[in-house]
Each structure stands twice: as structure tokens, then as C-alpha cells.
Length: 123
Ligand SMILES: [Zn+2]
Image (tube, rainbow, N blue to C red; front, side, top):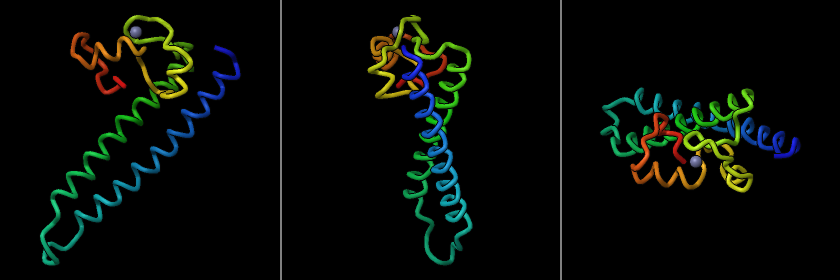
């Protein structure tokens, strides 16, 4: 991987991390608002609340993956598959900069053939 590509991916990861943090704040505010809502004013919409919670969980997992990927850049371990140790490949990293697996291992993890200690990173 070239130095330029490295820098570019790092910048993308950092920008996405900022964005994800902002979204998490927004969803947390929505949840708090829903919690503070006066129950007298109607039934709390549990379905909506579940949906918001699920979105928030996804965002938190994404944030975790982004932070992890950035830490790996600092450790010079970025771009290597967590399972087989092969290069993940620039094409895949460009499409999904915070992925921790090569395409082959990702599909093994998804099929449950390979157990991942960092299951939430299996993207
Ligand atoms: Zn792999």
C-alpha cells in the first residue's frame, strides 16, 4: 500500500468516526427525549424505541470497529486480515476501511465456520 493510500484511508476513518460519534449523540438525545416523554400524553411507542436502540447499537459497533482500525494504523497492523494474516486488499479497504477481515475469512465467520473473538467486527 502506498503512503498516499494509507493517509487517505486514515483520513476517511477519522472522518467517519467523527460522523458516527455525532450520530450516536443524536440517537442518545432521541432516546432520552422518549424516556422523558410524559406517559399521560399517550402510550410510549415501544416499537420506535426498539428501532432507535437497534440503530444505536449498530452505530456503537461501527464506532468500535473504526476506533480499532485507527489503532491498528498506529500499530502498523492495518490492512492485514485478523484471521489469516493476509493483506485485506486495497479494493476492499477502500470500500470498507474499518473491516478487519479479508473477503474469504469474512464469509467463513458469517457462516460460523470460523469463530471470531471480535464478532462485531465481522463485516
Ligand atoms: Zn483472512
